[in-house]
Image (cartoon, rainbow, N blue to C red):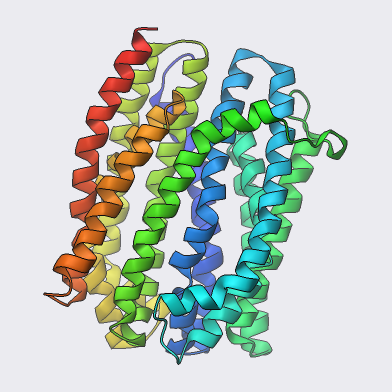
Length: 439
């Protein structure tokens, strides 16, 4: 990451990461497709109504994994083997503890949170059941993602991809068996997801256990060392808070969609799955930007860091325009994978028309904070993302949407919030860049 050409290395790093994210989304997408096809639109709405809520609950801990990635990449590039090993074992221990905490959060607060979102009575029981089973897999989910963050920090994005291919195939097969053969509906797809997450967790821990060198994992070395947690939290907690608060705005948006009934909810569920694939695609470039920047920051190569950001912007725009344009052009055909209900498809296309072609803006919005986190600055981009993205959407949901109630008006808030946030993040980036270059 610290020498030679950049673009080819960014592509080789980002592509497996992109495919890994897409496969991880397949866990939920296969759930949605199977219940939509074989259990009806109510079951589809029930699974979809949980997405924003699940993301809001887990993203604080997932954001902290970015701190693990940044710190591990810095120690690995600098050849600090002891610090690298202690970071690995502290991160894995924290992942296990946070996963167990999330199990209890899911079991005891799922129905209450769904009621706060005004989830319709005809789907709330199924939604609650899905969430409670899904959260039983949180320890496996957390351990996989923190383990994968360590592997990515040392430049290995291929093995996490292989692990997800294996677990994704298992998830798809189990979905078919449990829903089509045993007629289990939402509980069937939730059980399949938990089991597949357990498989990916076992594979990534086995990989770290069998690795040689500073990132080798041993259960006997598990620890929670304060000095590393502090550094991880400095980068990860602001990122996690940002992601959690942004997902809170998505929960509010989900509540607004819920007010249109189960047909609109099903359309949003399907459209949101497509947008999820766009997000992980552009986010893979952001992750690459952060990892490359962090390693070059560790060896003080400032000019190379600037080139990394420029190349990432080019790559992110290409990915977003190709995939976003394809999602819009073939949107109706893609939505038919999820459901054959024409009204659901119409609602889904109404949402996609305002979010797919403009998705490159979302990629730019995340790249600048990614570069700043790679340099160890996370609090300022967090605040700007909350003000720009969440603030705009809250004003939109409570100020503009009630006057002009339609899905179109609701989802115009996406590109508007992206543009405003980019403007603020660019100014912040150049201030941070100047501070770093003056060191």
